[in-house]
Length: 423
Image 1 (cartoon, one colour):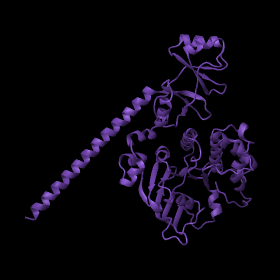
Image 2 (cartoon, one colour):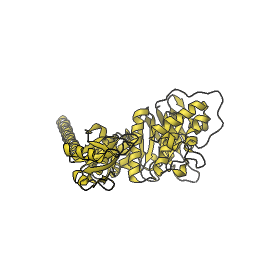
Image 3 (tube, rainbow, N blue to C red):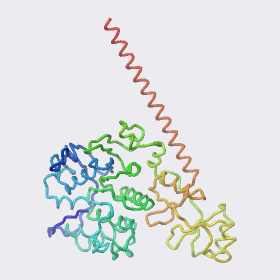
């Protein structure tokens, strides 16, 4: 989200057509600070495809945030070029540039004196959208990030949880429909559960919007989960490896990259498969408004030993077993087990497996954008997927070893031929 703005021209009055992602090219980008013996970022070149999510990951102080901020010129490069789409933006007005680029940061960066709606509307207003276009866009953005417009429109940032603030921050960054979204550790200041859900929301949004996203994180697991490609950066943003998560996990280029991958690469691959890619099963449900006798009959006559009770918004509320109903004595107020963990369709198998393992029932509820119930994923489905991943890794390792053996054999033949020629 651009933090420096000026008065817009009066020429544009309506909302522009929807925009998808744009290519980004960094050419020999360098940033030096006076008095520093070496550059903070040195000679970085990178081609980012339109509509892909690229993650910059590396040790603290390696220059990843500096590289990100040079793309929208919050930090001016000392040398090098930046191209977005077909346009060289290195020398253009930085304020105009930032209006074309969404920017989301840690702790959301919302203006505390503005309502949620005013925060989201800021850039569309400045770029000349009509009042009706701005109003519709605010409603659309709140709905897009899973916040009820009627409930959150007039709230102030201090009235929101950390996760809600981050959602509004993303909505504000996307409000003017930019082709490029820059995200600087946007989920680093929230608790782990909220962070998982925000990551899932970003994955879902990207499926719908197809923006070009450049995302900075120090968390390699987050990089695997979110990235189409990952750039592992050394000091001064030198690129150690720029590849898909699968390629980096299975074939890191050197010990530096292996250190980021860490132990358990096979298990980390669980972050590459989504819940939507495995079997989401139906599960019998009741609601809090159903009569007790009706709930009892459904549980007694059904095949399951358990029901899922939904609240008035169709969200998972309680798991109810037969024994719970026997002890209910006319009231379900204290009966059953509250649903503590849910996952979305865009959650990873790692997220789902963690949720299942922390629940004695061996299953987890899957929810939609507003938390509405969709189905369940159980332990057996997850274990089958894990077995498939491990088998795929085993076959890939065997194939890799076979290729190496053929290469060694070929080199040996060449050496022998060379030796014969010298006699």
